[in-house]
Image (cartoon, rainbow, N blue to C red; front, side):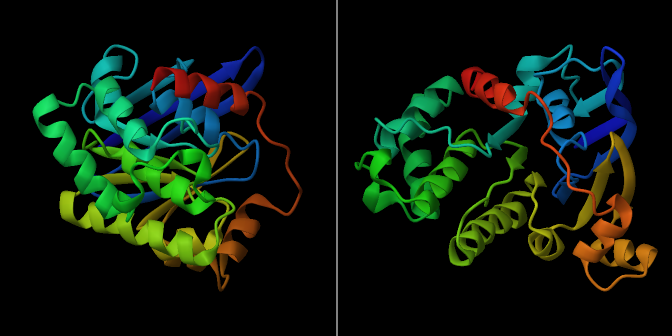
Length: 259
C-alpha cells in the first residue's frame, strides 16, 4: 500500500531525509518513530503530496504522489497533530464540509456521516458547536472526518497527543476496529512508546534522516537487547534532546488548506 525506495530530500546542503526505503502492507498498522528533527515530518509531507522528493520513488495505493496527486489524495485521510477543525461550525457541519471537499456523493453523504459520528460516539452532539467540545471529543471528530471518504490509508500525526489514557484508548479501539473491518492501512507517528508497542504491527525508527531499524516491537527489543520499546528506541537514537524540525508548523497550515 505504501512503497518507498531510496527516498531523499535535501534543503540546500542539508539532507532532511537520506536515502530511506520501507514498505507498508495493505491493512497493516505501521508506526513511524523518531526524535524531534529526525525526518518524520519531511517524510510524511512527501508521502502526502506536499513536498517533492529530491530523489527516490514513492507509491501510495499504486499511485505516484508527484504524477498522480489527486489519486493519492483520494487514497488517504489524515488526522493532524494540531487542531484543524472549524470551531465556529457544528460537528455535523464540519463533517458535511469535508464530505463535499472529498466529493462524497450526496445520496450517501448523510448516511455515512451518521454512521461515523455514531462510531466515535458523537452523534448525540452533532448539532453542538465544536468550540464547546473537549479535547478528546475534538480528536474523535477529527478521526471521523478523516474517514469520511473511506480512505485506503489513514495517516495519524501524533493523534493522541495530550489526551488522557481513557480517551487515547477509546480512539485506538475505534481505529483498530476499522483496520480489522475494512483492512484500512494505518501509518502513525507518536512519542508514546507504549502506544506504538501496543498498537503497531511493525515499527520503523528514523534518526538524522536515516532509517535505523524496522521490525516488530519484539524484534527491535531483541536487536538492542532491551526490555521495552522505549529502551530500544533510546539505544538506537541516543539520549540527546532534539529540536523540532523547521517548517512543521507551516506544513500543518498548508495541509489544512489542501484538505
